[in-house]
Length: 270
Image 1 (cartoon, one colour):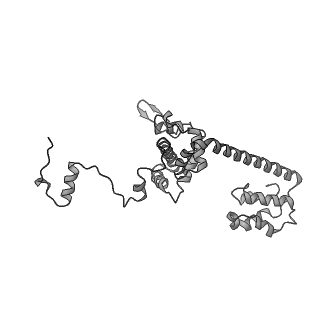
Image 2 (cartoon, helix red, strand yellow):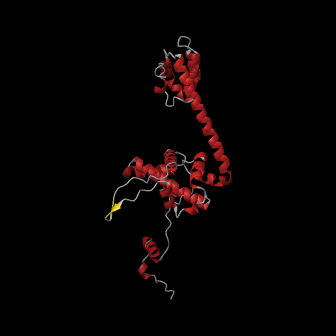
Image 3 (spheres, helix red, strand yellow):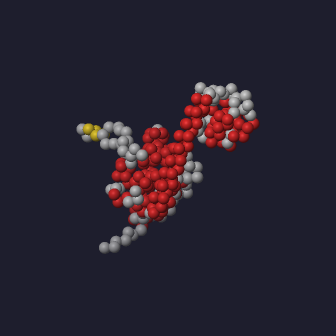
């Protein structure tokens, strides 16, 4: 497109999106002299309306020769073929996951997880969590745990394991979506705390690992996303910490109210 003086890729973030595709189709059917700006503006979708003037400037004076037009048609045909293959694959995934759909629903309740991403993750891990010793074992299998690098009793700083070629990138993408969720900011809060100490990259991996631990428990226990510290994290000011009552706690509480615990007789059950 650059050779043909079509600079639409420098304006739109996705040069193969709906707006770009329709504009290129229009340019292939019209010459630069016969281009109607109003017609082109109508092709610009809502998300790109603010860039209308920039788009028009980017395509002014274009000259698409026959050889370049043929290349564009072939590239578009190939892209449409790939899109069709992706759609067919997703349909097949939904058909095969149908017997296990309840697990997809459980995992989909977690921030950052959609029905599709939940299906893809469960297609990799399966729904039988008994094959893993625990959640830590699952994270290791997915490549979300640090590799072991210890020599002479000294542990060295290491990268995460190289396992999980397909699952690890998926979980990282889900983690990135989870920390952007305003409706359910659970992981966003966790991410913010870790990022301050360890930086963005390590924080994202940590969130992806937390999410995988949650998936392990949701699938093995057949329950939706209900972390034990959810209420405390969402509303720390109104959270009442549960305290196990024992003799010392009771006497300390009475003293805080002004009672003299020395005058109280401790019960002896023996």
